[in-house]
Length: 439
Image 1 (cartoon, rainbow, N blue to C red):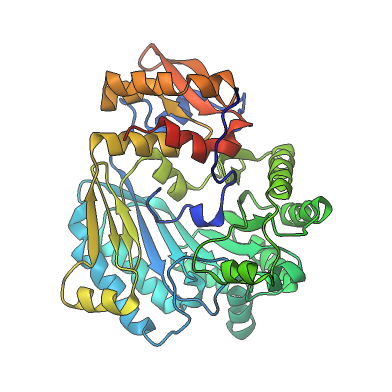
Image 2: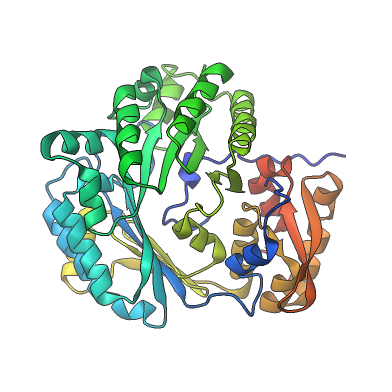
């Protein structure tokens, strides 16, 4: 009897890897020894000293219909918020005193809404208060309309970003078609999306773009053209998410009223399959369910999440993580500013049990091309956890949704057993991991 998994089948925009707590395809030429070290499955080589910093900029020009992230369309508190961000950085400087910060990520909201001077102040504060490695990855989420508007007014914004240390751009394209952008209430036009990438690729080597698929009535031909346009700019990374209907969003209300068509999941699956095939043909690796990068061009910041490295989230709604605890800041700009100004951290802390840590490792690992190491599970959590996972995964292996492989670890001179999702199983990862959890 086939397993029926009632779950979200596809990587959704709401699961976009940013700073939130986390509530493939096989690639035969992957260097698994390096991959294992990168994900911490080789205990000896795992880099326990690496860490990341996420800074949440909770401002947007307008609300996209599908978005359920924390943001405000009012900039009245911008200056006070910037000052509070700097102060939170200072208040938390000792949290990573035994770690080297390898990545800094500005997310939102819309970080590109900030002036260069604001971003410089925040970057300087991080370098002043933390031990940041040389050539750290410093990423900025940006919208095309912001980038092109500033360029028109004062020359190249891209050069200005580089001058303050930003070396990776994450540009929210979403679609190259005007009707799609209007249906999502995006602030930029199709022409701005293309012009922005044309200019950005002249200045930046490391660029990723967001694309949304599963938009109702989007034909495969139209989705293919979206991908063709994106690939024509020579970018080395794409993050792609299905359009999902989240509670308390405008999209949810529109569908309920009948003014917007419901999501066509079979069509979205076709889009996803085509995305995998198209990117692979152009030399991209699907290293996480929604992340496609050229070799050596994977997101270091997002990969650090999947490696289980610690990170600090700065700003309203930002999440932080260490192996044994998770915390999240209040999702209210005024309350956040008030608490920080009173020298109080406005966060809630959750202590993670061994079982919580196991569940998190399985949930994250199966979303990546590296999978999960049964050896690591036994080493870190205990033999009973490995036995549980092996037994619980049997039915999914029989149905070719999961696979097991044994690889040699030359450094430790032993065999490592890896459990990972098959290409077919990747669609059902969220449902499978729920059955692999220990409660």
